[in-house]
Length: 345
Image (cartoon, rainbow, N blue to C red; front, side, top):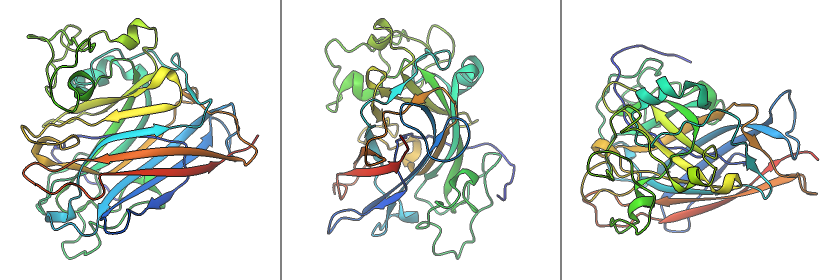
């Protein structure tokens, strides 16, 4: 893959993984958003098909596109929430890595320093800024696509996503991703709900000055960066995951919750573009367009039994948000993807 090095600048990421096969899900009639979800399931060691009731590795590539978008660089509505239901019997090994017990709003630089031993995966993401102005890129980004390339905002990188894009669409920002096993993963939705008001009894004391810091990236250090939630009190502190990109200008980290270490992953993407911004609308109005993550820890995710059909089924729901200042609701408001992945008994 072609790469270049220059000034670090980037913002945001999201994450999601599932035991699925590659597919493109078209929106219902009259809708515009399409969702790519390509995930390959591999055995923890060796080659061939993954075996049921064994640890597996995942390579996941997601991409959101809106062919009918009239916004700059064909920016789509942001993905605000992702819910993934793994096959029954799937579990996360809470002891795979030392739990990175910090707030999902802790600074990524602190996470990379303190939680390096908790990393379970790496990857990359593209953020669509909506402006066809070239950005200085993080080291490792592909060169900018040609200005006259009419496909740069519609194409996807499905053939070899691990290699990353062959060129960076003009106006997009390329970021590196690290996924940490951890337990302090309460997005602002958990603490405040969709109405934006504190939820009674929500375990969201992040120990920052003034208590809960809605949409605020916490300062680094064990006092402002960590807090206890109900998952920790229940001894499930290793069941969740923190996704982070560390950069000089706009560092960001947030997380996903794996319910009871089992087969449901919930990712709530924060709203970081000020009053009126929807979930998933990041600093500057950027939205995630592409996401790739390789869960390569060989003892993190254990698959459920391989059924008689020799296919694992997964349901994944993507929920989209309105962009700040726009009145039209996203079309569709959500997509639920049912997909399958081959396995062996």
